[in-house]
Image 1 (cartoon, rainbow, N blue to C red):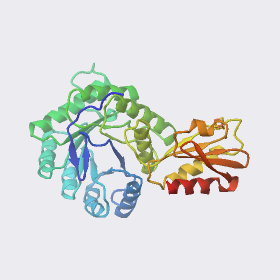
Image 2 (cartoon, protein in one colour; image 1 turned 120 degrees about the vertical axis):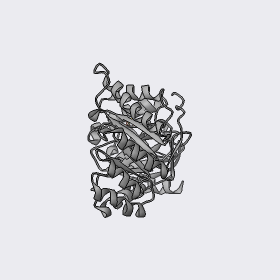
Image 3 (cartoon, rainbow, N blue to C red; image 1 turned 45 degrees about the vertical axis):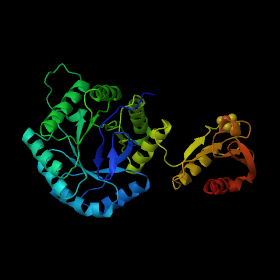
Length: 348
Ligand code: SF4
């Protein structure tokens, strides 16, 4: 695994992005931002799942003004997502947004970006230049690949902000196509010092979207690229946060809650191991401890296959062995599998 790229640290409200700070997991609300109560409820749920930064869509004046009330009831920094109308960015800043996301493909004239940058600078609010392959400005040369066009669009905005002595910059270059996304990020990573927000855009429903996002995000993280991530999914945003942490945990980049090891089950299993693993997974969502839990289908291979787990269960016919760090600590009846396992986990 490559060493993490050295990026300039920026502060988004209480959260540091880039530098040596942990890779930040973020998401975006799916509620109508103007519906203040629903948006607050969704953000609070995301906070419970460990979301560290949240973005809200700001499609109109009412949504921009809603930020003021939303901010009062949430704990994590809020980023306003602005397209088309630079005046909404100014209003979002007024309302207390901790960060802005601008799409260089649709904000328009440089003077508008300049106006936003000056207002953001006054408040020490960072701006993410969020390039999206689906809404690129006209390239300088039609021969450029999509990845090159994305980099060109980002650099143009970055140079504009830099000319205003504005350097609270974060950049994203998202495409649906994974190789295009990787190529774009690899290119820009060498050209700018700013932190990178990584993700695959419009990745899809959880079934395919988590795989697509994981392939793209993990490849970049493995290359040392990425300071904050979002797994974009056509689903409740809590799924994005859960998937984000699973990616970071898989690469040993963050610890967050338990890790579940479960065997795939096979003809040797004498209980419904798939159902048991799903039930345990659901229970583990309520647990914060960074422990490894194993759910194994048989006593033959179970303890051995999961010997580095903190707590495990290896099921047999109507009975299961509980084990701790690979050592047997008791035998439980089938009706008690879940409760006995959870009791041991809570006692760790
Ligand atoms: S732990 Fe046992 S049941 Fe599960 S896959 Fe391995 S051999 Fe099969």
